[in-house]
Length: 110
Length: 115
Image (cartoon, rainbow over all chains, first blue to last red; front, side, top):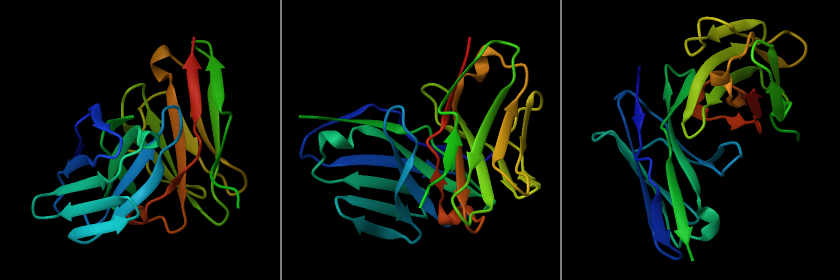
C-alpha cells in the first residue's frame, strides 16, 4: 500500500506569519500532488495542485515539490484565523484513486 | 452548476439496520469515488465506480458493504447490519476523466451515526 505521511499537528502560528505544512510520499512514480483544506465538519476542498519540481504560487499559497526527496509542502503566507483548518496532502495511486495523508491541523491565532 | 450532491447529510441508524448513502456526481461526470473518514482520522479510499461498473473496490470492507452506480440515478453505498464502528463521515467525489491525477471534487458528505 502506498503511503502519504503528514504530521498531525496541531501547528500553531500567529496571524500574519508563514505556516509551513509538510508531506512525504512513498511512490517514486507519483507525478501529481494535491493539497486539500478541510474545515471542521465540512468536506475537503482542493486548494492546490502541483506536477513539476519547484514552486507553484497561487495567492497566499505556495506548493513546493521535490521528487528526489519525495517531499511536497504547502506554505501559507500572511496566515489568517480563517486559514485554521486541517490540510490534507493527496497523491494518486494507480491513477485511479487519491491516497490521502492523515492531515495536519493548522491553528492561526490572532 | 450543481456540484456533487450527497444525501442525506445526516443519517442515524440503530445497530443492525441498513444504511443507504446516495451520491449524484457533477453533471457530465461518470466516475465516482467513495471515501470514509473516521473521527479524527484521514480520508480512506473505499471504492471507485463508473456507470454500471466497479473499477476498484480494494478499500471496501469484505462484509456488509456494497456499492453500485447504475446507468440511471445516483451511486449508492449500502451498509448492511450497521455497527457502531461504521459511524463516520462518508464522502463521495466525482471526476470527468476518471484519472485521479486531475484531482476531483467532493460532495458535502453523509454523517452516519450508529446508535
